[in-house]
Image (cartoon, rainbow, N blue to C red; front, side, top):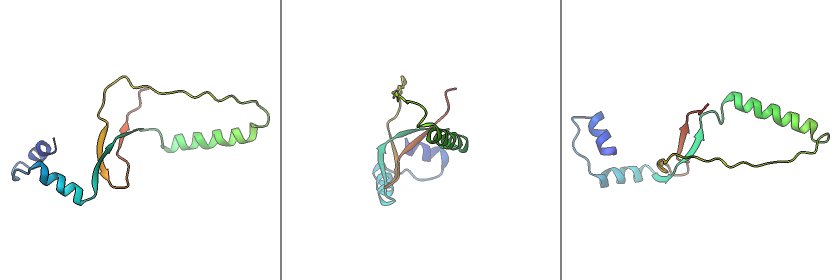
Length: 100
């Protein structure tokens, strides 16, 4: 996959073996990891402001109400790639587009 991409981007470049690519990536401390799906809106300024507003409201109203917390589990019905590359110490993430 990487080799094909290199041939498209650099048509005049010599053929590179997979082991050479692997060695270069290892030398740059890039490893294969399980991909983490990160929704595009997760850490937007708008979402952060909404979290701040909710936390402020919750702190102000915690004594007045009897809160019940219900957790929900997300589900993804599509098959997807679960591994990706990133520098050692960094997460391998995939930014997701909003479904709404």
